[in-house]
Image (cartoon, rainbow, N blue to C red):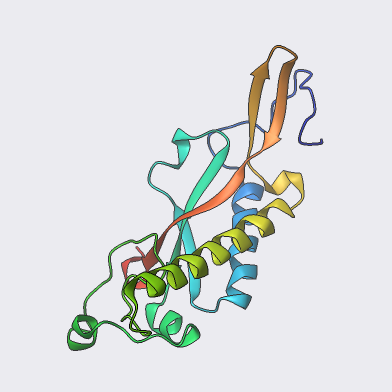
Length: 164
């Protein structure tokens, strides 16, 4: 079924709950992403993921020590002094790292761009999956109902030590 197919009664792909194949699709994406970004160790649903039809939000579990090594970044002094501190969820990849270049704005942008690159990579992996591994939604217009694949988006990065 193409992403712009007019629905003719079969909406079996449309459900706010994920099928086993759709969960497996996200598992495959995260596993593939972790080959490029070895600090990614898993995923979970974003708390309010069912609120949006066209976007499927997830959070990624990360090992911040591995992320620090991967990006050649140093933790802020507080996190060095208190290594047992569990990091809060964040959408900014460099939130817990020291300003390594002496320019807070440029350092922020470097972290923002690194996070954006990672998030775009995850979304593109999801788009490449066969349709049965993707979540879908219905859009109604004057031309009828159409079915589309959702976009997978990373919402936050979570400390792996918070995983239940």
